[in-house]
Image (cartoon, rainbow, N blue to C red):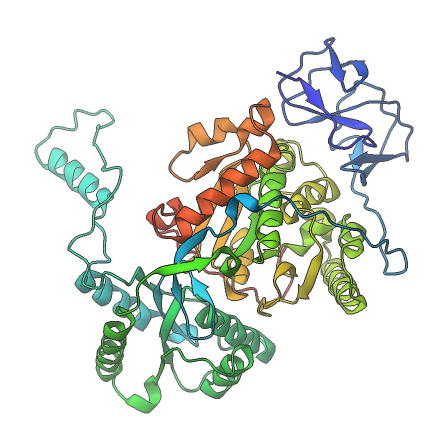
Length: 549
């Protein structure tokens, strides 16, 4: 196995693909380097001598500046490197040409999806139930318990059985002072047969917004929820309003009309203060929703072209291999889908820090470049004004596993977007309508970002991770891709695809990207469920547009 590599020929640091003891001489391309100290796998070491103040480069971009002299073969650490990123402007734009990948293998290939009246196609068929304000969260939970249990969407809770077993041992004096061994079912089964075979589930969203705070937060929330209803994976929705909240029904209707003026999906809106008792509200919601579910169940899966796929591109719990294996692999998948006429959405703007110019170079329209620059600069300035900055983005886990500056992390994260032209730039809650690669402003926070991706139309999400992130989304299947095989072996319950073979050299990025597209088709057709859905990881956190990195 190769011990270390550079990612670009202009890089002046190498990435260790395995642990390298101090004093070992390794070959990096055409160069032989004797490492001066132990280099941990995923971490970097110098390929030349650096003086204090010298810039250090990876992925052909600046990822930091030396804080002290660094000798060839020495490890790059948080002690000797600090964040620095390249500048960007529309004046420096150098338009790039793109050679589409060969997609002849997928010509005529389809996935089996749910066709909506507006032309979108879902990879699933869900009914949504959510509140306009947090005051209705308890009523949402009441509806959730009733519908899931009665319609066969509830699963047995294996941990209840575990606790019951422990209780039984305790009551019969059989604990014996040791740690009891109790078996837990690997895959919990539904408590009863599903009533509606063509409905994949009812998704119940709760949140802490809709009142208090500033009015703009409620407007943003209404736009986000409207995007969820417009998502092709959603058949319709039941919406509960208290009545007096900031997120008024009219505000929500305006947002729904803005995202899709010709929306044909059923939307039930109920106001508690106008209805009266809680009992009346719940009964009304149940009866109206059930009758719509009967109609929704009439829709089945039919073949659809791959151009109807919209994939969200996300990373979380990243490590030093993410930007070498998983991220460029789904970047190639994105390129394949774009060449097939589909859409891809790249999010997490704090993790595009340092690669802005490369993305600007991929934009044909000045208006897109100007919008992207404005959003990025305003976002970064708001972070600085709050006493933080993009440089604070890397988590302790990122740093421990080799991503020691935001520019370094961002350079690898941006690889998720492949190499295709940027066709549109979207602010948070704006809906993706342009085929091709779209940039969507979200925080780097995993759940806030995936929440935003689904709200902007992603009907499936690719989520790369090097450390293991147990999260998902209520309406968009989230496929987890491990950057390394150790993670896939350690946490097989959450990992759908292992891209570690890119690190070992057993597969190329292109081969892995093609494998991922094949997996997407199976998941989009309902034949291979995402593990996040099987684990019921239905995470939903709206971004309040304050500072969240």
